[in-house]
Image (cartoon, rainbow, N blue to C red):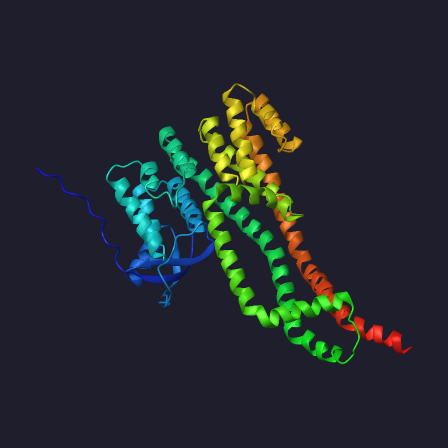
Length: 412
């Protein structure tokens, strides 16, 4: 008899409901879920131990394109799954409940596919590996370790914590990178406005002086004329240059690696990126090693998660030296990249048999330092913008008034 092929059922178009309620601990909570009706929504909430007080249908919103799945969505799903598994909810039911409660159709489709796979007997790690865009090797290896040890709920708690901390660190790095870009963008816009609209008015005044203008003033006027006459061409050239740079960046591993090295040398931002890479390395290695993943494989995951080519190469070098029989702390010291404190913590971990605990402490230290530095940078952003704008505007004003001062000296 021919075996029936399983087909992926189409997800029904359900309405999205906003709700408020109280959980088993008496905490007031709120959220959104997908259901066929208000009655079904209330029933779904009660099945999760939530007593709903308000359930309302959410108005449909127009949006461009299909919804995407963000890494933050995977972090939230991981935490929901960890909570449900620890509460004793069966895996398939937990995945289905999370799917029904999500208003992002792409997420619901993803979870529906995974639910069908594991319902048919496919191990969770294999079902996840079919979606590498959303679940990387590190994630799947941790799930595999949990399935093999029979402690999937404990592993999922680690995965959720890891993903949450990784997302928080990523947002901090984005914030740190955004500040200098914002300052440069504002300074550039103000400079262009002054060169196009203000400097030409002074140029008309200077044309009647009949004397040679100072070199600095001539430079500023030359820039102004170039922008006025060749602005569109310069903009097109800039766009073309940016396009080819991004294309080269995407295709050239060597270029990406070189830029990673340069980023680490930028004042302030480079320090933040260094600390962030150390935090990622330590957190990833601690999480994978504690889950029972062999150290060599765990180092592969940590290298990929470090987020910087300089650290990736150093971690792979550590892996090779450990494979040759060297202790981890000595291999780290040989890279001349890891701070003495990190090397000492790893050495203590090796001697006491608590590498994962020591690495978690290292990650906590550097994550806290990144938080503090980004917060400090955000406090400095306003005075930085004012200072840079002061230099730019002040420089242009000096350039425009130099001829006037020069004429004043001649007259006197």
